[in-house]
Image (cartoon, rainbow, N blue to C red; front, top):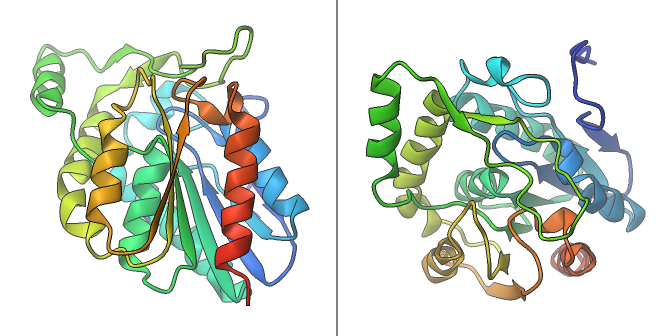
Length: 253
């Protein structure tokens, strides 16, 4: 087992649970950490799933650790976690929030055998003009902008995301999103898409793009009371129950 960083943010630990023959891979978002997805992971474990929730490279410590990383590092870590879980389980469901949703789509396109995919306010397209804007700021010598974390409607609930958003890694996320269009059509597994109507981080149109592009069956749920980090917001119970119900259904038999 890999030793955890000494400066790990409390609650940002990766998490595993040995359960039954069906597995669930749970993926957090950009600048966030497993803390934002812990309620989902624990509910899946309680439902009998074998669960893996990795800490993605550069996350969960300090923003300086994220700056040298990028999409290749995160997708490689997610793929390794998926393959390890799939080797131990008969079927695997992947669940992702935000960038974790982008990784979920990437895994779904790489692994057609996946049992099901759950997307929570996932980013699957490049916001118009954002790559150019980020590149322009990087050209000035700045390496970060104010953070995007903790977009939560519920008062007094805070996501332990980084206070800043590093620009070079963000650029790799946008580059991956630009290439996502070709990948989405390769997704044949059943899909559950959960979307907050008011999201200040990822435009909700991403969910529409996702729903219209995948080749597999699609279920959608609208989150009326939550912002981006819906797993910690007013609709958390709905997010959790619908994820567990979907995962149970697609791995049955």
